[in-house]
Image (tube, rainbow, N blue to C red; front, side, top):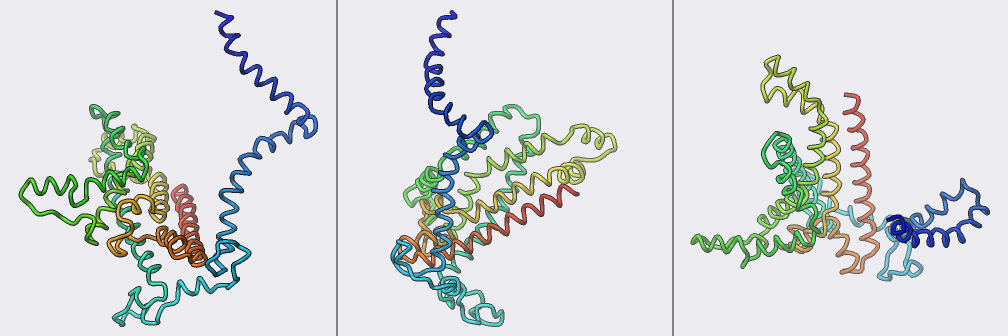
Length: 336
């Protein structure tokens, strides 16, 4: 059997010999300590070309105007794009005015509609998802039959592409879809799940929660399983009930994990795009138009690259603040 092992090793030995022909002289030239930079160089090049360079170009485009995508053909306009985004009539911030917080009085009304939609989506999607993920994690942390199966069921949607998730739910919710077929079969009227504004907003949140909840449930489940079981036994001997154990043991010890889940879901909710774009295309009207889709449409449908880049800078500032909030909350929970 030894000859089989030697035969299987031959290709690898040949590759190692070939690599040594190239890397041997290079190691003598650079030295052993500097060879690490050589192996990291491909990843640095990919990061520089596909992440760092687009970020720098986006920053430059945010302060330029014109319909040309070539940087040398664009005109520097300073803060004009940012000023355009925040240019609203004074009544926009006057609580006594009928146009208080009405995007129609702003120069870029679609930006404010997208901002309002994103804020509403983040509040409800994150709130509902964290709550359901916590309840599901608490249930899966108990000794129930088929626990591994149920964990797989809840995590399965996470494995699906957002586009696949959106196409599945679009097939279910369309006027001739599964849900309306069931309603018609029961003698009821069809419901405009994706063509009426409030229904569309609701289903965008429901689909997003369904697709992402499993990931956050697993994080919370790991946090629950790190809590020593002896604490619950001691609390039970002291006569503490289930609610008191949850409030005084589970919740405080789970708080650092909760902070991580909360901030991760917040950042992901602010960046929502692909799933909603396939499901509703931002409609009906602008009911499900969110920030990233506004940036996409402003850049590639309207050819306003400067305005789109300025909007992405605003979004980056919001994400930066959320990240700082995560660090601050994380340190506070660790101290507590």
